[in-house]
Every structure is written in structure tokens, then in C-alpha cells.
Amino acid sequence: MNTQEQVGAEARYQAALNEGRFLIQRCEGCGRHVFYPRVVCPHCGGDSLAWVEPKGTGVVYSTTTVRRKPEAGGDYDVSLIDLDEGVRMMSRVEGIAPTEVKIGMRVRAKVIDNKGAGLVVFTPEEAR
Amino acid sequence: MSLADLRGKTAIVGVGLAGCGEARGMTDMEILAQAATKAVADAGLTMKDMDGLCTANLMSAIWPLNVVEYLGLQPKFVEGTNVGGSAFVAHQLPSMMALATGVCDAVLVCYGSVQRTGTMGRKERTAARNVLDPNPYEAPYQPFNPPSSYALVAARHMHQYGTTRRQLAEIAVAFRRWAQLNPEAFSREPLDIETVLKARMITDPFTAYDCCLVTDGAAAYVMTRADRAKDLKKKPIYLLSNATAVWHRSVIGMRDLTVSPSKESGERAFAAAGLGPKDIDVVQVYDAFSINVILALEDLGFCKKGEGGPFVENGAIGPGGRLPVNTNGGGLSCVHPNMYGAFATIEAVRQLRGECGERQVKGAKTAVVNGNGGNAAASQSTSVLATAEAL
Ligand SMILES: [Zn+2]
Image 1 (spheres, rainbow over the protein chains, first blue to last red):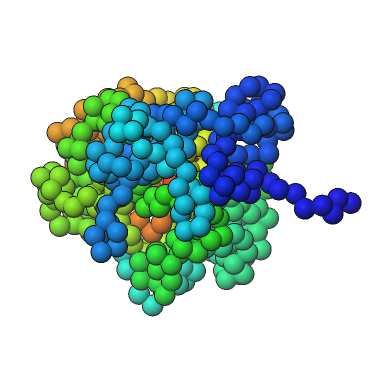
Image 2: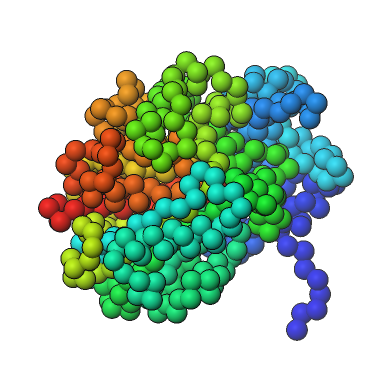
């Protein structure tokens, strides 16, 4: 019996984010990148997934502005970002008004502190 | 054996609705039981005849047990697969197989929810589900789900194909016009395109008119074998086919936001039925959001991909239009108690029976039902139904 505690993919991903590092996975079987983190590759079924640092750049695939009362914090962006590695994630684009986030916009990832936990958000590339 | 071998072997012989709109003071189970009682009586059968059961509920993972106990059933066939709101369409294929093989003789499909007026309302129900079934890769970004996920779908469709908010508004207005012909519909006051366009945004590009209602409601129907169906009280409505496709769980897993699993479920369902979109008289699609209707019409082949927007223009899917869609008023204007699949099925049956009064599509002999489930068109289930003349 294995009594040693394991660190699953989900916990490992968040632990890296909490240290300010954004990692995704790459399958050693088929070579494709994988997100969100898993213990098995959804493309080929392989169970050997290496952690890699993405370039951090990508493009807005779709976007919506969630409307919220100003006293509750105001409107905010929810976007789907296609990373240049070929995987998609949900995130938000910061640094511009949520209604100014457009499909096709080039963006760059950064890790922020969200109530004590690391979180990936994006900013427009040209704004840097 | 293939799916086509089940064509016309089973029929829907009884339908019932209860607690639609507001069912203050009632529970999910109580209105479900009322709808079930009506469906069984409509078929000319008794509850004791129900030796098959299909049911699901978002609040209990083992809901069929609750229903068995409450209704006093002892089924030989139980199906509780929950693929979201399409479940009560997706329950048809296993029921067709169970009936055709003689595993059981009569299947009761039933659902009920008092999400609008219940002591545990929609907000509390959503919060509880997020605890039990978390999505850590979406939750920190606070999408207002399900609307935000479908808004992302709509935004991408608009970007890729030039679909407009006015075209989405056409859908809300068409279904409202159907609802005005349906005394059982929840929202019947007049609605025009300008009102939809000027309404406050909730999650762009959606206003409240793009989002389904939040109502109470229960729906039940009874299926049996074709040989037995002929001797029952009501005109049997035959199931020519049913197919379900599940491609993802949530919007981050939807590879192409402009194509839903209806593409696959529709192809399989039409092939087994031996019919195509041009043969269909009336369409019932799960309109959780306005964009669902465009995806369904495209993916089922009523128009080409990207042409759903122009297709719905000028009242084309409303009363008097070229294709009658959601003749009860749909989830947008008739009823939407969280999971709508059974309600879409029942409206198709009523149309094919000719029971729809002012909103009746004259001479309707064939219908398509398309169920939708999950936070982003994750599961789709398509059925083709027909009267005896179209068998
Ligand atoms: Zn792989």
C-alpha cells in the first residue's frame, strides 16, 4: 500500500500559481499541449504529462462583459483565451474597459494574487 | 441491429404538465407527481402500469429512487442519466430499447422543479451545485452562468458570421408571438424588437429577453410499444429516432463555439428516421438562450452554418412564418423550470395530435425535438416524431 500523499495535477497547477508561476502541460505521448491540467491526455490517452511554461501570449477567442452594479464592483470581463501553444482557457483581460476587449486581440498572461491564491489574467499586448 | 431498427417501434401515448409558471407552496416532487398522474391518465393507463421510469433532477444525484418511493413504483427499467436539460429527450433512446426488447411495457418520463417559488430558490440551488460540482478553471473569473457561457457562444457566432443582436431579438419576438396564442404560457405581453434591443445588458450581447424564463413547472409523458399504443385512449405519436451527443462539460471544453453537438445528434437522428429537415412540419428546440435556436437550426441542417441569423429574420419562425419553431413560446416565453427537455417533447406531441388550438400548425405530421444541456450546449439530444400517416 502506498501511504505517501500524492500531489494531483489540479493541486500542482494551483501550487505553482501561488508561487507566481503559470504552468501548463505537454503530453509526452502525442506532443500536444494540454489545459486544464489532467493526469491523462484527452487527445491520446497517454498518462505522461510534463509541466511546461507557456510563452504567455495568446489571442481572445471570445469575450463577454458581465454587468454588475457599481456598488458591487462594476462591470467585468470574462474571456476565452487561445494560448499560442494551442490550448484554451477562461480568464479576464485587464487594463482596458471590459467592453473594449475584442475578439482577435493579442494578449499576454500575468499571475495575480486573488484573495491569497494565484490567478492567471491577461493584458493587451500593445498596452505593455 | 441499428438505430433505424427502432424506427416507429415505440410511441408517446400520454402527456401531462403541472405547476407551470408558479407553484407556490409546492415541492419539486409534488408537482412532478401531479404531472405524472395527468400523463398516465391521458394514456388511459394507471400508475401501476408504469414498469419503466426515467427521471432526473439537478438537486439529487439519485433522484430516481426518490420518485420510485414517492409514486409507489417498482420498475423493471430505471434510467436516471443526467446530461442536463436535454436529459428528458435523451431518456428516449434507452426507453425505446427497453420497450422494444420487452424489458418493460410502459415507461414514465417525468420531471419537476419549483426553482422560482420554492424555499430553495434558483440562487441557492446554483450555489449548492457549485459546491458539489466545482469548476476551478472557470469559477475564479465569475462567469454569470449559464448566461455568460452562451453569451461567449453568441459573441463568437456574431464575430465569425456577422450574426446581429437584431437577429437574436427576432427569436425572442417570434416565441413571444407563439406564447400569445398559448393560454398556458407564462409571458404573453406584447414584445417588439426595439424593446429587446433597448433592454439592459446582463452579459453582452444578452439582455434578459435573450435568456430563458425562471419558472416552476413539471412535465411527464408515457411511452409504450407501438402494438400496445394503438389500443390506448389517445392518438399515438411514434418515435422514429432519438440520438444524443455529448462533447464537453462547459464552455472551456467547447472546441468550436459556433458548432454544437446537435450536428452529430441531428445527423444520427435524421438518418435513422429516414427523414431530413425538409420533411419536418414543426420544430421544438431547447431555447435556453436566443443563440441556441440559431445553433440548432444550423446544426440540424435547416440552414447552412452561419446562415441562422438571416434564416430567422422577418418572423420566419413565428406564427405564419416559413418554419414553426417552439409553438408553445419555448423556454423564452412559455415555461423554463431549469430543465426543459420534457416540455419541448410534450409540445411536439400535442402539435402532432392536433391539440394546440389557436397555435396549431395545420396538418402537422412530423416533428423534431432538440434538447440542450449543460452550461454551453454540452449535450444535445435529437428526436424525430411522427403520426401514423407519416410512419
Ligand atoms: Zn497525448
